[in-house]
Length: 483
Ligand SMILES: Cc1cc2nc3c(=O)[nH]c(=O)nc-3n(C[C@H](O)[C@H](O)[C@H](O)COP(=O)(O)OP(=O)(O)OC[C@H]3O[C@@H](n4cnc5c(N)ncnc54)[C@H](O)[C@@H]3O)c2cc1C
Image 1 (cartoon, helix red, strand yellow):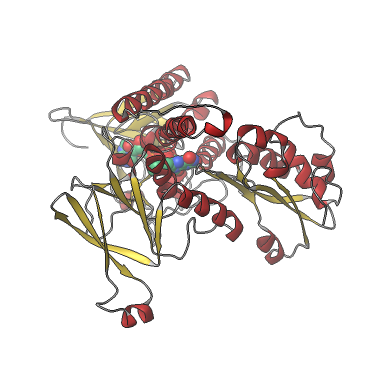
Image 2 (cartoon, protein in one colour):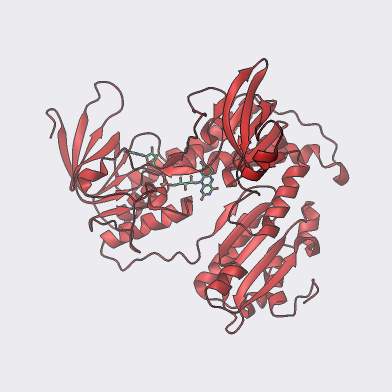
């Protein structure tokens, strides 16, 4: 122990108060464990402070502005003016309400909160350095630890987040004035969500993506609908290009890019370079786990080559008494996956027979239109040895979708032909992020196509599309032609 340290002890030490860590701490508190939560920055982690919540707040605000200005067909004439500083202030208010809620919930569940940065001293203790000069430090001894230190945005060569025109997703969500133009590097879900926000608010957006389409990992017909809509909002895509650097020019910056196609590069006149001028460049190329600042070696834990901590189906690391949850424990790097792992870790520590089951972890992309997926695609079902049967229902056949003015997209269900068990679903269209929850429940409950198709759904709702897609797979959808 360092001279001057105060030493304390706890049953369960949780490092990081994001959706993985704070949920683990609350669950451990509910289970009457003595629990200490250490956070170096703000309660709620990336999700509440710089990720899920602020991005969704900005998406909603941008939608309101865009819809109000584009509702002539519905007889609404409006020319909305955007005050970005006020919008960001409103978003910050939402964030504050939630983060203070997290702090209160932890306290109410008996969690001991420590503000500071933790790093392992050995296999059973951490040193916590309190923020600021002269604030001192303390040593906390633990029986069990849960590592939930999350992730940070990946930086690419030539684009340092220290430079003012270069934005991370966090910076982009805190801008106080709207850039006239922006280059977005990366067309994954974060790049696409933020491109849509800025395009709807009036920024001229150019997206540079290394791969040949948006949203890697999603099916082609899902991507096409999202890409077409983004293009119709004025977003200019350049696929098969990487961003290599930027320089200041007279009235902004110039971003240089290279093609990844070597053949095209060899043939191109003047090489494969192309430049794009803008006010800002947003880099959204993915996130990396925060495992390098924890002195994991002292705990006897070695992250894998990508920096993630490997765990078993009970969130346990190679050290039986140390658990890892959330983004540090690997893909999918999503808040709800981290929270579930946090609950499981706490329950395992309390001696409950909890284990993780990833078969029904949904994912949502809050683009326009939204995307929601869960379980297996048709191709994945085939690869897994099933004989899949697929049912689909287009939103243009949904009365509710037409009344919202959003009728692009579809609900698709994938089931096992022999048993009728639902294996997965893909939804692209209005409220896809909400609708996918119905399929998540169906998979978790072991529901069949018949179960969902015969459930009476409220009319007129988008959820009727879920029922109709299942009926379509059975050959008897009412409001769509059956194949
Ligand atoms: C723009 C954006 C949008 C997103 N949208 C969504 C979405 O819509 N849905 C979704 O599911 N996910 C979304 N995500 C991902 C989501 O934010 C993460 O998956 C989630 O926050 C991971 O939770 P976590 O608890 O593992 O880590 P984090 O939320 O990153 O929290 C980790 C915490 O640990 C603290 N910490 C780190 N090191 C230490 C240390 N040594 N000592 C003490 N404290 C430490 C950090 O300060 C932080 O508060 C989004 C992310 C971004 C960036």
